[in-house]
Image (tube, rainbow, N blue to C red; front, side, top):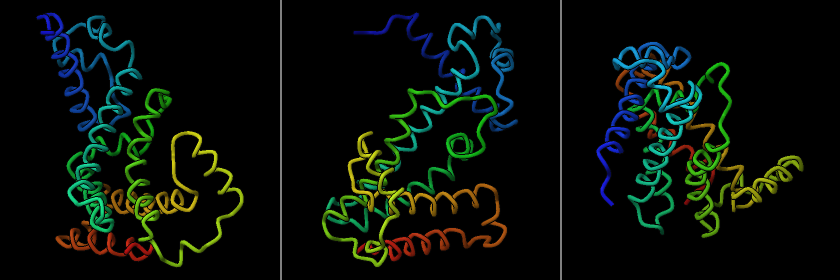
Length: 230
């Protein structure tokens, strides 16, 4: 069914609000996000903008949802550039996509994983969207594990009882793999997030200058070795 003119205008306005919000975040930081300031820049009245987003938190939720969707799509594209039987290639592709997306979208990445906005509570509807990105990482490792392609010493380490209980609980919430796979996925995430954050805060470039790309590639290979991926 074709959209009506009113529907098109509404969607265009919503998109303009988001673009203006990201501009404001880029210039002043996410903590300064203001619906009134967005309305002024767009030439709208504040009450007019409130017809689209009831408050700041509703807009933040929409921005986070869009950012998570974009991020996850990039992870899937990086993974799927390699055949399903090439587990190491899919891992490399996913890790590269993670870092590259953050480089291209620093404000979005920091909104997802950086300093929380004071007073903003993570909206319940964001849960499945956020989980989807982790499931890409967990799935790449899980598929390799099931195929017998992860054989490092770390696989033989015994998980503490408290972690085993927690990982079993997570399986009931849609994370299908064993505790060992979840542990490996969280470990990889912590490493790549640390590397990415150092880059976004300009520490890596300060140390490495033009060598950042080589550093990232080396770290990806190191993660492959650490988890014993073949």
